[in-house]
Amino acid sequence: MIRKFVTKFIGDKNFYRKLLILVFPIIIQQGITSFVSLLDNVMVGRLGTESMSGVAIVNQLLYVFNLAIFGGVSGASIYGAQFFGKGDHDGVRSAFRFKIIFSVVVTIVASMGLTVWKEPLISLFLTESVSGGNIAYTLSEAKDYLRIMMFGMIPFAFSQTYASTLRETGETFSPMAASCIAILLNLLLNYCFIFGNFGMPRLGVVGAALGTIISRYVEALFLIVRTQIYRKKFIFIQKAFRSFYIPLDIVKKIFITGSPLIVNEILWSVGVTVINQSYSTRGLMVVAATNITSTVWNLFSIVMFAMGTAVSIVIGQLLGADRIEEAKDTDNKLLFFTVALHIIIGGIIILAAPYIPQIYNVEPEVKELTTSLLRVAGAALPIHAFAHVTYFTLRSGGKTFITFLFDSIYTWVVPLPIAFFLCRMTGLPIVTIYFCVQFIDGIKVIIGIMLLKSGIWAKRIVAE
Image 1: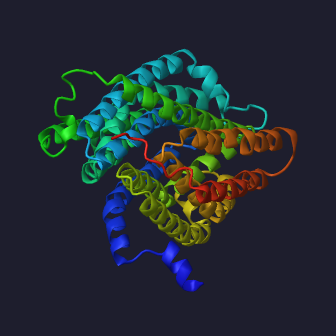
Image 2 (image 1 turned 45 degrees about the vertical axis):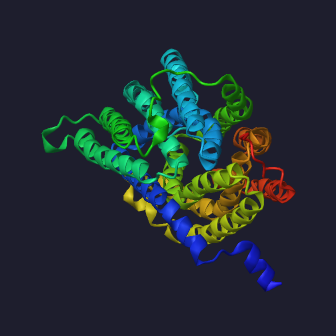
Image 3 (image 1 turned 135 degrees about the vertical axis):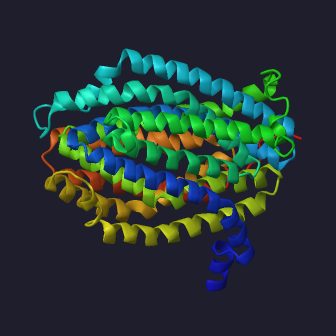
């Protein structure tokens, strides 16, 4: 029994060596990104609860745009990884072109929407009656921050396009290097612009936005230039811009397979935004506490995010090479490793929870609430790790409609109504509500186990 379990879920040294080579650059990139995001969060937090809440609200709105880009890029990436797995560089190039066109269109639409409905969208997160802060000042800070951040949408879209395509070809160093350069620059610029250090003007939240968009342009430029320099290695970029022609059959396949994924990312991100908006009805203190919790959670979830990327690359390439049984076996081992590791990481979050909020310049009530929320988040982390890897497994085999049901529809049918109802119709403490929303994903785990065991995801979707 034990030997059978080990054979099914535990890999050999070579397996983990290859996995480490793949995910280590991604973990470094995600780790630095999340750590600098935490430091940025702390710096903005020193401006006060209102400023931090305003920035958090805008970032929640931009989160919808970010995931819309991610959804479109990911839809094409399913084919990019499988094309590369079978050695079809023309196919990878077509997927890359699709990402470029999609990203530009979505950026234009999102920019127009945020320009027209800026104030109404921000105001959804501001509740006068129960808030302990200055609502008008929070709104003003949010509008100032968003006005600058919108200029960073185009470089973000291009960075995602280049980085995802490079990863599909097994190149993880370039995205890691670009991200590291950008986020360290962001940290330095934020330190200068937010507080007026080194002779720079003190710009507050505007300075935070300015530092972010400058670093995004640097990141995009680095990826574009490096890919061109090593064009012999990255074959997909050769002649990629001589035209934007994409074979109609590939466009149809990406749309058919990718559309549910695009809709999924948009609906899921909007669903998460609605959940956070429900939390915000309990006041600015809750907005600040959930913002800190989310930032810290992202830092501790870097391995989970990296494993999701690893699954999409490794399983996608195996399926593209028509090595179906090997893909199933590899996925079992990746899934077990991810969950086991996040039981440990979740315990670390619980132990660190009382100390993390102390680095913020916020009210004692916010610190106390953040501690409680972090403990809940740490306990629920293994559940989310399982669901995360399951999502990428289903996606790697092109089962995007199932991922649509598994991810966004589930969010809108289960946790969202719970958060909406409990926040507005009951007097339950916010920590209790947060606990219910986090742990209801246990249902998702059960569904995921059934889907994985069925093997319906293990399909090759690129033709000979």
